[in-house]
Length: 125
Image 1 (tube, rainbow, N blue to C red):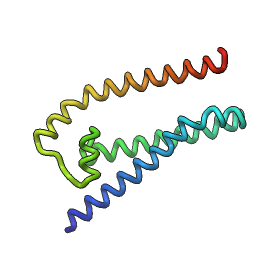
Image 2 (image 1 turned 135 degrees about the horizontal axis):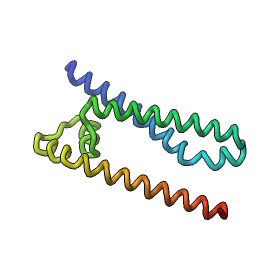
Image 3 (image 1 turned 90 degrees about the horizontal axis):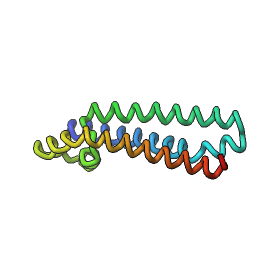
């Protein structure tokens, strides 16, 4: 019974941290142009604070993922549902991690470049 309560508390804590991180990530993506456009340097300062908070919460989420030994999407979904993966499934997921990191890094770089080029095109630079 106590073990189940601890797992439920860990799930709730992880979901809360993930939700806060998601909000800051969304704010970091959506707010830079309006803030800088309407508030100039003050807006840029506000955006930097939002981005720093997003980074802080992303670090907390990553620490919690390592603590709970959940890294891949499948592991996270299983954790949220209160289930655990079999040893074979766990080994498969651990084998995927290095490749997923590379794909995510390259994907983020490509998306960042596309967004940057889009804003440069809009601004006529």
